Amino acid sequence: MDLTDTQRAIHAFIAERIEAEGFAPSQAEIARAFGFKGVRAAQYHLEALEAAGVVERSPGRARSLRLLQLPDGPRQLDLPANDDTLQLPVLGQVAAGVPIGADIGSDRMVLMDRALFSPTPDYLLKVKGDSMRDEGIFDGDLIGVHRTSEARNGQVVIARIDDEITVKLLKIGQGRVRLLPRNPDYAPIEVQPGQDFAIEGLYCGLVRPNA
Image 1 (cartoon, rainbow, N blue to C red):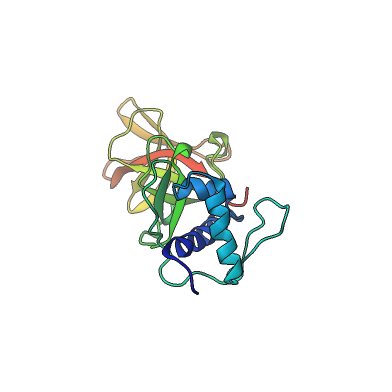
Image 2 (cartoon, rainbow, N blue to C red):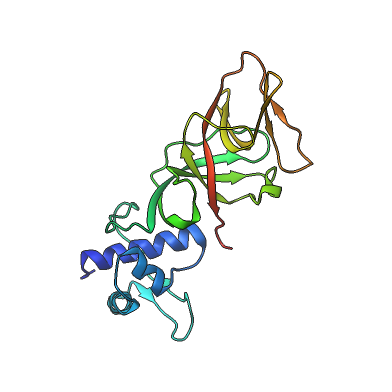
């Protein structure tokens, strides 16, 4: 492809957003991610991508970008610094149900709006199960995790129990630690003496692909 580095990066950004969310970014989102002053610059680069035959647009339809060719090279994006966006790795999956092993070690990177999260996450995990549905966390969601070993009573945490990972509401009291679901169909998990237990991080927001 006879494209500039910026156009290649935009092409990769579009591919990441389609993969993560099921639809293409808008021109305004592209402009914001790349630090352009307005959507006209984003439009110019999209026209170049279309002319190169790597994307296709449907006039008059929002988010109508369609990839005709996948980006070359690694999926990690080398984007300009932008205070509004975050590049986050997807490190595996976390159980919203009974604990499951986490498939840690993915090199998949996705670009996210910083405003979706508080505090700022260090990585993303894909949720499996529905035990946290009353917290608004559903099967298939990508949740942001702020890496820390400390948490307060009542916070939603990502916890490790005997090398398995789960997301639950932390309850500390009366000399015991419990991990509570937010779905009455599931029983609390009580951490037993001698179990290998640790807080891996705090839940700090989510993205729902294909929503």
